[in-house]
Every structure is written in structure tokens, then in C-alpha cells.
Image 1 (cartoon, rainbow, N blue to C red):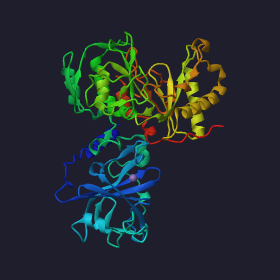
Image 2 (cartoon, protein in one colour):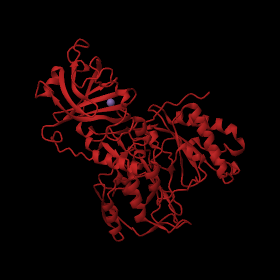
Image 3 (cartoon, rainbow, N blue to C red):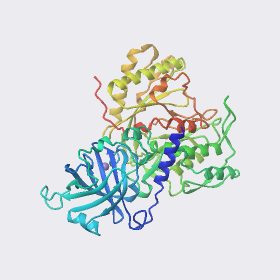
Image 4 (tube, rainbow, N blue to C red):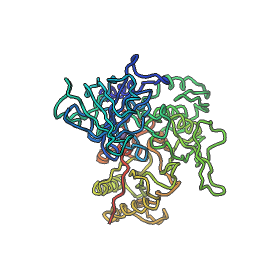
Amino acid sequence: MAGKLDIYRGMRDFSRTPEPAGAVGGAEGERRFVVQRHRASRLHYDVRFEIDGVLVSWAVPKGPTLDPKARRLAMHVEDHPVEYLHFEGVIPSGEYGGGDVIVWDTGTWEPVHTDDPGAAVRDGELHAEMHGHKLRGRLVLVRRDDRGGAGSDEWMLLHKHDDHAVGGWDPEEHPRSVLSGRTNEEVVEDPHRIWRSEAPAAEASVSLLPESLPAEAIDELESLGSGGTWEVFGRRLKVTNLDKVLFPADDRGRSVTKRELLAYTARVAPVALPYLAGRPLNMHRYPNGVGGKGFWHKQRPEHAPGWLRCWENPDADEGETTAYVVPDEPAALVWVANFGALEWHPWTSRAESPHEPTYALIDLDPGERTTWDDLLALARLHRTALDHLGVTARPKVTGRRGIQIWVPVTPGYTFEDTRAWVEKVSRTVGKVVPELISWKWEVKQRKGLARLDYTQNAINKTLVAPYSARPAAGAPVSVPIAWSELDDPGLRTDRWTIRTVLDRLVERGDPFRALLGAAQELPEIS
Ligand code: MN
């Protein structure tokens, strides 16, 4: 566990490379480079040189090498912002370059035969003396004007015969990050950062680590009276009614105040945000606590701060919600919690394409006669079915009584598609245990049996977000779990609360991270 935190801290130091506008390099005159191993639709290595304030970049399918006999194809691609220099993590699928990225090598370099490397690139030949961890000696990039004419994107990358050359050297035999020591596979299982391609470069690299909130921010919240202005994640939020009890005590401890909910929200926001950002949010509000009546609130209120992203629904009919909150940053989630929305329901689709689901959702909804063992049996049968189909999916406990399974899908599906697919999966499972299942629509007609609810796959129908609190005593939380935890005798749907889930995140990471780079086509089910 200590080792894991060391990695966290190490990553955060590396990520803290503020780039003053126009400044280049660490020390005076030093130019940096990075080679990222990037598993996108195809594996490739991105070789990037810092030139004139940007990262001039080539995608090299077979990767750079020290082997002087090798000639590598290198596709000249668009410049990247310097903020990308030490990015390591996951680019969510559906975004540009979706996949996982490690910093395979980094260091400094010197242009050779020129003091204007930008001009050398325009002229089609760059010689670079490399001072990296893996790459050393002289690399040469030459444009292949014989292929596609002058200005072709096709270049050749080679290593000179020099003291650093190593015959037969294969980059795939050196697969670990020089920053974190991790492989792409390890990063995708537990990414510490994601890159949001649509955001401005300075904001695109988003930490997923629960402890990224400075302790002083929590101290400041503690020191406020019943309300005041809280500065958190760079925003100034007006927070109110901080001592109001929102959740009554359960048998595990004392009641939970709004102050505690806000502190939890701020701590968990970086972890929960990838499942909420870019999506319209349906807010389940309990301004007087979960003992009172809750209600759905979808309309973005007039008094919301200007920085809180708004999405106007072009399909809104008369009397329907016209403008939604889109929580694109951690402070937005804190605003939502202060608004009394203790339960967060993001849309399954993104604001940009509201009719295209990004997940197929399987909702195991127990009836009053369904036992815990019955529910586990249903979840395990789905695990077997999805494994058999070769589908990447993860379960989460709801914090109330149910278990859900989230299946990330590639763009292009409609809700009808995902609903039909989930229905097929669940009906196949249902045939194995017909005594546990009812397909009846009406609760009364279900006779207390469980329902496999595929109908949640519809626009503006939502399931509770990962790491959202639930409106019940003790402030239980909906928590993603590993498939193997279905076999843990201590598992319960309301096992974790806002007081315990952060420790679990530090120890176990977030099992849903594996879904972020894993959008997939749904296999045919016969
Ligand atoms: Mn790439």
C-alpha cells in the first residue's frame, strides 16, 4: 500500500510541470522530448520533440530503436501542446486518440547541424542527439518525398552507427514507463490520470486520485460556520446550512451533516468525474435531508454560477427541461452537493450526442423475496455470460439493494440497440434461473421476484453514478467492485458509506477505471 501511494505522489510531482507561456525547457536552452507508448486503435509510439513551444510529433508504429540497421516508418502528425509532455494515463474512448498512454521514455535532446530545428523539420530532415533513459545517441528523421511527393507525412526514423547503437534492440522488450515503472496494461487497470481531448490543454490532464484535494481545503470547510464562501478546486463556492443533518445515523455511527457530504464530494470528485463529465445530470435533491421528501431536479437553476457548464436540450418539448447542468470539473460536483442533490444520475449519453449511449446497462433489481444469495447468483450468471461473450464489463453495488453491470460501447449505437442487446443477455441468464425472475412490468405482479431491467437503456433514463451517495441512513455509496468481489463473503450492496469508501479507493483503486479505455462493439447474440 505504501508503494502505491509512492507512485501516486511520484505521478503528482511529475504532473506538476507548470508551463509559463512561451517558456521552453527545464534549464536554460534545454529541450525536452517524450516517447509515449500509446495503445489506441493500433499500438504505436509517439515520438515528440519540444520545438518552438510545442511538441512536434511523429507516430512510429514499430517504435524507435537503437538498432542502426532498422528503418522505421514515422508518420508526421499534428503538434501537441507541451502540457502533454508527461501525460500518462487513459484517454477515454470516444475521444481523440482514445486508449492508454505511458511515458515510455523522456529526457532532453539537442538539435544537430542546426540551431533552428523548426526549419529543419520544414525542410524534411531533423538530426537529434538524445539524452533519454532508453534513447541515447543520434536519431535522424527524414521525410520521404519519394512517397506522396514533397510535404508527405511519411518520414523515416533511424539511429546512427554511434557509441550508443545496439544491434537488434527492440523497444517492445523495454515496455515499462520511465515515470511510474508501470506497463500500459497496469495503467489501464488503475489509471491515475485521464486526458480530455476536448478541453483546453491546460485543463485536459485530469487527476483521478482521491487525495488530490489539498488538506487545507478541508480545514477551511471545517472552519466555516453554518455557511460561507469555500474556495475549492480554484472556484469560490457559496456553501450553506453546513450543520444540517442530511443522513440519520445507522447502526455504524453518528448522523451525517451536509458539511461532511461536501467534504466527501470534494475528495471523491476527481475519481467520480470521468463518469459524469460531458453528460447532462439529473439531480436527486433532498434539501431537508433523506428523512424528508426527495425530488428530481433537472433544470439548471438561474442562480447557478456562470462557470458551471450548461447544456440546452434541443429536443425539449413544451414543459420539459430545457437546460441541464453538465458537471465538467470537480468544483461542479461540489456545487451540485451544496444544492442538496446528494444523489447524482448522469445520462448514459454525452451532451454532444444525446441519442448515442456510451454504456449498455444491466440493472439487477431485487424483489422483496429476492435473497442476497439470489442476487449474487444472478450477478455471477451475468459475469459468466459476459465473459463467454468476451465483453469487458464491471459490476457495482448500488448502496441500496441492487447490483448493476456497466458495459462500455463504441459510438454509433442507439438506445434501441443497447436495450435489445441487454434484454437478450438477461433473458438468456433468466432461462437458467426462471424461479428467481419475473418479466412482469408491474411490481405487484412480480410476486417479490427479481427483475432484470433492460428498460433503463433509454434516453434520459439514468442509473446512479459511481461513488454517488444514496438517500438512506448512514450515507451509503454506490461502489464499483471487481468481478472477484462477488465471491467475497463480506460483500453487501450497502457495505460502503461516504466515511469508508475513500479508504477503499486508496487500497483497491477504482475497478471502473478498466472501462474508460474499453469501449467495444457488442457481439451478436444468437
Ligand atoms: Mn498517439
